[in-house]
Image (cartoon, rainbow, N blue to C red):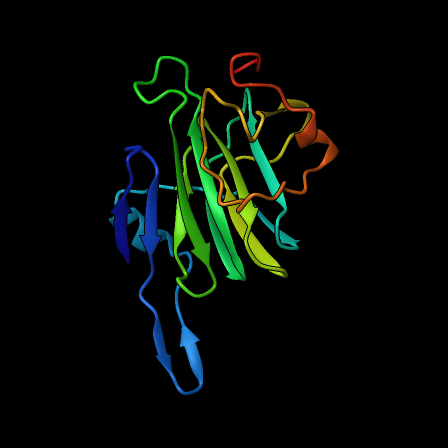
Length: 180
């Protein structure tokens, strides 16, 4: 497993070793011992799977009192995946990282607790999987506007507007959001 650092020190990209031949491929997407050997002692309690058409933007989501760490990946299609540091007092507070995850590149991104997370689907039929270190709690959830100018995420929208949920359409700016 290759670990690729990002400009946000706690967010990393994992590139698994893929074994392929004319039948297809095999890869380990999670192995506690392998991740532990890389310095990632992770205890996952919940797996999630979403499917979206192209142009759907989900996020930027976080939990206030029980923040979730997420190991995210795509098994069909592609996304532009984003993590935003929302840890008050952090040297990188309000900074973001974005990376394309796809069924083709098979990369995974570790989004640590204390980060808001979101993604934009780039293809129809995109299946997005994520392992979480805390259970989802709707009463603990927060959301930050996807287009907050103080964060300045450069979403690859090509001039079109994303499709948002009602919740994401009503999200507030980072400055106006109650953080942990």
